[in-house]
Image 1 (cartoon, rainbow, N blue to C red):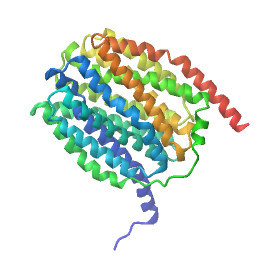
Image 2: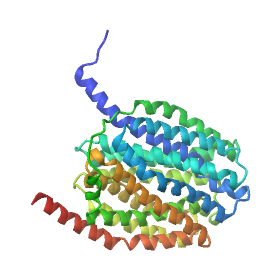
Image 3: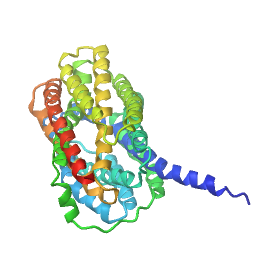
Image 4: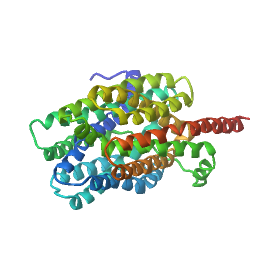
Length: 396
């Protein structure tokens, strides 16, 4: 019987350790965005008001807000592989049942289920990847992980848009839930990480650092625009620009393509420093300025130009976000900090969703969050200053 040389086997095992999580996180974004990008249009068609849409979408980050920190702590104490599988199963079931919902009251518990499944999956998957991440080439490995997320983010709506040529919007829910099945099976191939023992006081020590508080403040404000995008972006494309579902799908693909390319480029540059602050500064500037410019977008060409600038900023900041988590906290207990940072992001997303329901139109919310994002640049400077001082004390 033919046997692989030990060296070749080790290489394949190492590749599988990073490839399987990356493929699964791609599948989550692909399957989720396949239907989720068109949910606002579906709700609008069946008579759900903009305020109700904002309320339903704010339900998801509210559930994430409640569950993410406890799930992050659990990922430090227990094996995360089964939790990832459970999250996928809960998501697929909730999405399937959404096919049969007729009004916002019936949809509310299903949106709660989607939020719970998302919390279980995201928290444990991100924690798992940071735990298995090696010291060498960390930004590059994070860039590959992030780029596959963004690829799924863009391809999902495109596939969903083409499927809508031959089926009803409701049927997309069924297709999306069924597409989760092979990746649910693949989740059982995720590596097992043995938990380590440590004291709860270690978490308290982390929260006494000013750099951590600056980081969390920036994360909250940056998260505002995610909520605005969830509620307003697809409706902005449909109502303000008059785009068809197919064109909307192509817009998401362009966004994803730029995110993939820029994330990989940023990963290469990010490997030059432990916590590359330039990614933070330019990420805040580009993302904030482009959101403000959405107030002046009146056609597809203007939109593409603004969104290219925007997703460049997002790619920079999101890569910085994960690099900072890996650098600020020990890998053995990074799960709870991942949960805390995600919770802060979710709180920002929830606030952004509620803002979108309160502010008139689909462009004004982008302008407001754009200004708020740029006000975080001085806070980023404080983050860099505090981090430098903390490291000086650590190594002195």
